[in-house]
Length: 406
Image (cartoon, rainbow, N blue to C red; front, side):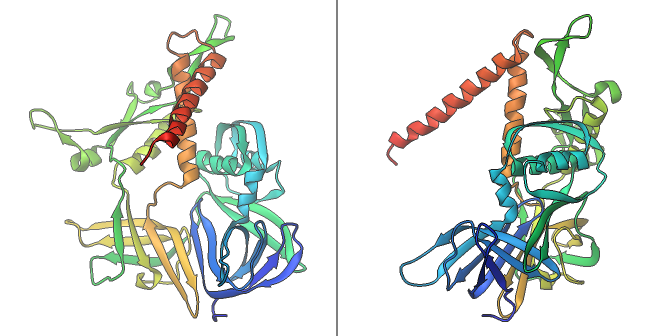
């Protein structure tokens, strides 16, 4: 076994010790902020699906679950394992109405059906969301998204086995270690990627569909217009960045002034205009500049070692004028062999699958409110039925592709 490859303690799905799982060659550990956390390696042995791998990463215990193996008739077994957070896919939440809750309360609520506890939760203010018929991992990711936290699994080990599993949610992982990246000056092996998301210099913000009430304040069936924040923003239902307009806007028809590039963002569960304004401003800060990432070997960073979430000073000398900014390490891939080779992504990454699913769920929820608000009289049940019917029809259309020859 290579000198820097960690020792993998091997347990079955019932946490009974099997022994040590032997790694043949290199082991690759990939992790992202609030996202992927996987192991990939070849092995002389063949673990079963659901077996657990416990290993010590410096001073931190990590636990992964075997989710896939490729087993040729002759040769080594290829193993792919995910963080033991993946077991939360098997815990189900029927309904959790998290209205005006602290992050600690929300985290405790979504972990209640699981065997995971709360190790620490930062004070992230009050917020709210509805979790309805979802697995606990989706709910955990949703809480992190709504409250603006970053999740770390915490594995406690005693007597040679996992004694307790818990979640730590910080407002921001990582720290400033004096790391510096200078792009464009004799840097081999560094890749800059400009992601495809559009740049907006102004954003309209919309919240939940506002329910109808009668003269006594009682709720009636149906929804009307979506919540806006003009009443707390000088009558404007959008926020704008004039500095971004100068750089990323466009000319008006007469080419006499630069105008904004408008976009929109919907927070379908938000019912408070002041918080909606704050959320939209935060979204604009991200939308008003291109999404750029730099993939680079850790050895190319000037400074100490690099951990996930750490802040890096970036100087991009290929731009005129050169870009000077701070960015974070959002992805890290370490290859354990004779030595440890780490490659990090600084800046932005494309959204993970669960994030795309969250956006899709929010869009469906917003569509439901729109359907219900067509004449102001449709009931929520009727609107839900309409949306489900449309979605089912779309899925049926996809299924028909099976009959098409390619």
